[in-house]
Length: 483
Image (cartoon, rainbow, N blue to C red; front, side, top):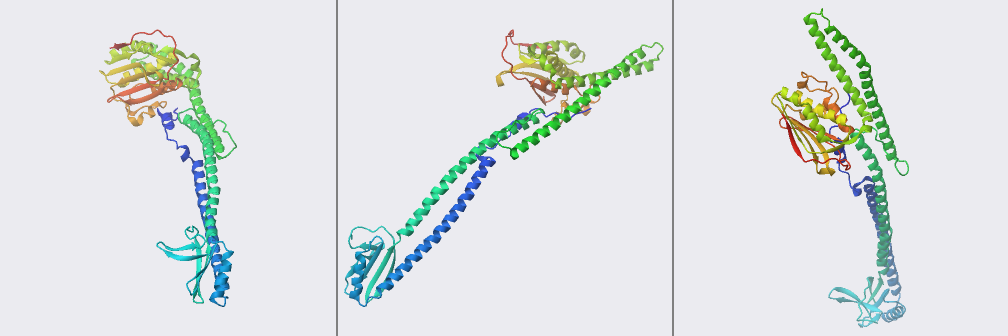
């Protein structure tokens, strides 16, 4: 029975390596910035429109006042009467607010000021302070009366003050709003980022094969992100139950069929021992017995995988020397390598510490060496190395290289599946569980399994996590060749 292919080596790392948007590019911050921009544009349009309407209203009111005042001065019957009226009006009028001027036919000027030509155009001169420039702007109306010239000008200070007032209102209303909105968006973005980090971490663990991962309880009130987290948990639980059920079915089938198949093997052995059996039937019984033994071995491997995935071997973990274990397995397989015309070379440091179960790590070495012996032609070189990498705090690295046919890149994820065999390997003995068992044992030990190209051949690399320092006898670094 086959199962879904496990995630390819490095899937978790690839998931974690996905770039995350910065806080300023997060959805809550972008939404806050967008709302601030929208509010700012609406405020500018609203206040700008109000200012234009009020300014035009004030301007029109000034013009109407000027027309009414000029109309009042027109009632004077003569130039002398108009001059006297202008003088009387000028004595009670502030020239900074209103200029009243009459240039009589005899050339005399009456009032509190006058408009005269200058190099920059026209300017207003106040009679009481002729050398002091007037900084105010005025709206003026001039009319010819009694062969003289009447000028009435009203200050535009109210309109100018209106513009300053609107600018102040805009600044005091918009700036705090922008600051508080962006600050609130930043706080919400940080809160959302923490919640998203919890969901992303769970998804990364699920993608790496840890189906027991669940999203922790998210802080704050329930919202759409909480609902998404709950759906992720339900999906993970359903996937875990499905995989567990599939594994249990495989284990149950292997367990239930193991005993009857062993009985068939025993009966075939007894049949071979029958003295009256003809040679052809004896050969058929022998071949049937060999096939039965392969079936028993397959079921035994399936049961072992189920036991390892349950995590029970972790209770037997200890700090051991992987280099010494590799040396032992190399000596055991030395005769088989010589018999097949292959050369097995071991290069190992001493010691190389790992935290694991000795029997399972020995099985990893045995499976890798047997695969290399089975799938390489005579005369091939098989190199087994154990070293301690200086990266990541001194992790143990186990590597096996051969110069056989290798595994195509597109098939390297498939060969880790249970009972999967390459097309060119179907004619060789085996059940398709060797590398699958290696992958399961590597996962149990927290090691990463990588399959690469040795150009030609296959290179299998296992990287174990560092272990805490413990006293182990330190020997010199040696290189051993078994041939």
